[in-house]
Image (cartoon, rainbow, N blue to C red; front, side, top):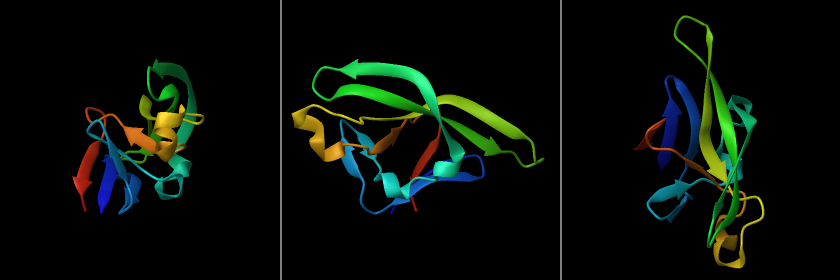
Length: 101
């Protein structure tokens, strides 16, 4: 089981990730959708296509809300070579904690 957390908030947890270029891509059903908001950011990968991004909102220990931009990305309409990760969500390793749970 692979788990992604930001502070005390679990963002995703799954035994069914797909690893591409060293990144775990999580099935859409395994993410904590209540923590995510859509970002305006989009980037393009030559073989995967156009990526969309998520921001994350979490609650800190003192009860306040914290927001972090562009924490995760996904390919809503990937190119043919990346169809296996369509809609799957990957996370920036320098913004979250990714661990084997």
